[in-house]
Image 1 (tube, rainbow, N blue to C red):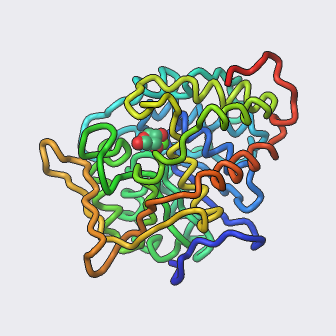
Image 2: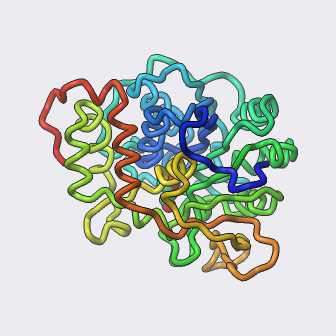
Length: 329
Ligand code: RIB
Ligand code: CA
């Protein structure tokens, strides 16, 4: 595991990333960012159920990669359900397909055979100190991987999640969705001995896709008209969109890997509540504790964030193809 901040930006060789995700509107936008930014090389995508079923999250990951021109990146499916609890579906937020209003062509390629947990263990173990593991969905695959092969905790270059909150939750007053979906898995992950860089709601609800941002997306050809804007427009539940501007939670996790200087983070001890009737999934965050196990992101340079993200999107082939219909920002 890295000794310093572990996360560096700049002209270094691309950061090798495995993204474990549950596409999902914002997961899809994170995948597109990962495909577009030259400082990142997606070594693979592993999928977990969460926003929608495993079958749909896997199909969505394949479709977004294909649309982004990166059908070469392997996708490996993982856990269809939490470790202990019943499946909770997020289609009320992400739409029945999981991609909001986007209707992407089905991917040409299929998911790779095998299980996500084995892909994670084998790929990370084959390149100790090189792979940044990023998780933007429930942590079920990650928990199973650290249980099956504890050495990955020291083999990763860094471990970054979108999840949790030092303050209010979004699926309950106490818990954020990814953690709430599988609190036992999250407890295993936060207790595994590595440092978890946590891009939680404290920071992700600052990076909203305002009308100005959506206007800039409208200038990105088919990428804007067929992915970014319809995906964003498909957020169903407005609980997080008081002003109507949608958050892009998961993109923050990859942006943190790419340009950490845009974020303000503090060390903390984070423990996951698993027993509370009202507080299950709460990430209890103590910034004063000795022996921190997490780096908690609390602030972001919003203008710099959107320049970074939209700059990466502009590099994708689909951004250069004129939209077939006028985009609706
Ligand atoms: O709470 C936001 C998180 O839950 C994001 O990862 C979103 O995709 C959903 O999974
Ligand atoms: Ca997600």
